[in-house]
Figure 1 (tube, one colour):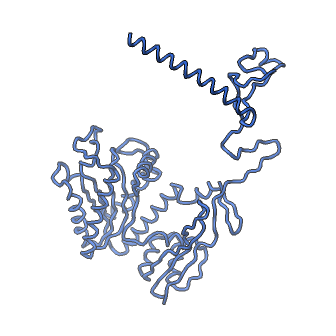
Figure 2 (cartoon, helix red, strand yellow):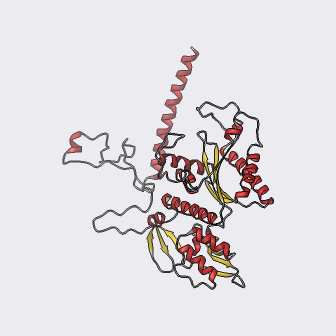
Figure 3 (tube, helix red, strand yellow):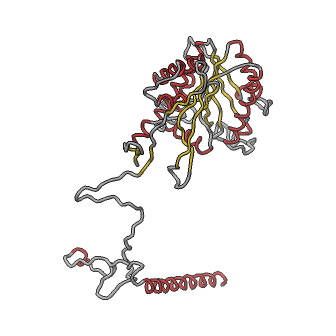
Length: 409
């Protein structure tokens, strides 16, 4: 397959496009780590502290114990339902914090236990005076379900205050991010004993099978405007705010991007246009065209076009060189099969079963006869095949009758 520019005719192999995009796990991991690093730098400038939280489901949602034995208290909760439970816990806790005027930001990573039940690792940045409120609210909702079961206080909610002198916040979450993408830098998975690459494949397959979102940022602007502005190598910005945002994007400095967006109160909204579907004929879909930007130094919103060319995925055209075989354009073989049983033997032709060894290896070699195409002798072929099938059914009925008689005797 290849990608063709419908405006300029430029052709790029699809594998090169995939290798350079976020479809490549290595690129996805690097982009994820760069964004987490930017969030840490932005919050550090605001003198916020970092918390590393681990949230686990109640024991009734776990199919098996850590030893592998079946859990008698398991109530049949699927990994998707368990993920919905964790989402509900997080949503209730953050709503309570928002009503109290507590703002948080960070990223959460979801991983499976040995029995496929999900658990969350959450990196939270918050003002120092609000850190205790955050931990108290999340812990309360995490333990609201089955709070008195053994080990609930110990395993259901854990919090670790990250000391900048001992290491960065990115270092705490880097292992979980890598293990959930491609396993780079992870030698052995502590829970399964697999290599980092094998564990990553299992985690990705688990997330796709159950429809679970592996990563989610919160408290920061969406990533789409950042990626769209990065597409513009040159940008004649109508304001200083948009110029600074574009410069931060092109320099791959997500922390500076957050600082510019916060300082100039920039807000972006994606702009979509209708276009013909590349998958189905006579169907219209919506495609991303650009952004609508608003800032303090703009009197009105400014539309920024980030996608001018139209690309389409098409089959690659290959031309066979002189003397080479051209690849087939269809997966079907229109050649008739070899007639091994001689069902279609005609006068003067020899079947494969009737050949002598000398005929096969000698100079008087005869090619095996092939079945006629449906256009030649179609009626005779079907009638003869019907006779063979009737004979086979009669033999089967006779055998079954004999077996029944022996049993009855």
